[in-house]
Image 1: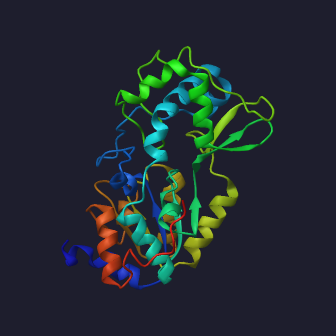
Image 2: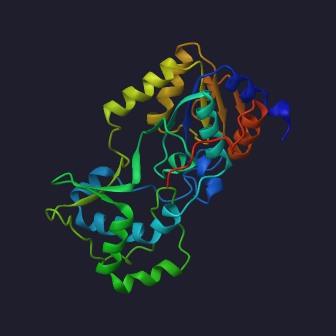
Amino acid sequence: MDRNTLAPLIELLRDEPIAVLSGAGLSAASGLPTYRGADGQWLHRKPILHQDFIRSAAVRRRYWARSLVGWPTIGHAEPNVGHLALASLEHRGAVNAVITQNVDGLHQKAGSRAVIELHGSIARVRCLACGADHLRAEVQDWLRASNPAFDGALAEGVTGGPDGDAQLDEGRHEDFTVPDCPACGGVLKPDVVFYGDGVPRERVDRAMAAVDRASGLLIVGSSLMVYSGYRFADRAHRQGKPVVAINRGLTRADALLSAKVDVDCALALDEAANAIGAPGNAVPTPSR
């Protein structure tokens, strides 16, 4: 990759420590699809809305049927060279926090420790009644046991989403059985922020504090079309700090950027980390 193209990124990384805001584009190299194309438009049907999930048993059946099919893709995904580079940069002291819009847990798998999951984690499921937490991998077994005839859909090559929400034909989930919380019989919900819900204030405050402490902000693989991510670019810009994006195509924050590197974000991170002496193999032991 041309070092001149990467120059703004390398310069930002040398002015440590920086904060990083990551989006679905970073996980594309791990085999997970993105939400939007280079023009900022949706590539899939829009995800389920929070209030629809809460109010409607039919919507919950649709969600969990699609999740049963889509979970193996996201649950078995492995971090790519971009995740590993960020973990290495954190270990070196060049990154003070990774604020991620992703729910896939790949930053932690790569060895990053200072991770703020804005939208939660798809690997956890919470009961809306008693608050009990369950592992998503465990819930997968419950879903399969409750829907033995549905399991054949796993082999049909349906298209998944970046949050494990597979694209199934309407009507395939009408007879789907959703297991209840084994602790109290309550409704189970993935521990993620659905569209239409708000990011918990405590997470926002921690992310804002990380931006405040940083010398600049690096945006990786996000169009920032959703305000929950855009606000951090706006804050850094208002503070007069450099804001650099590695992203293919349009971002909502283009007018705020000091520079944009329009290349593959995973490869760019890997090469930039090596350029400042933080190779991806110099990371803490990844979590499993």
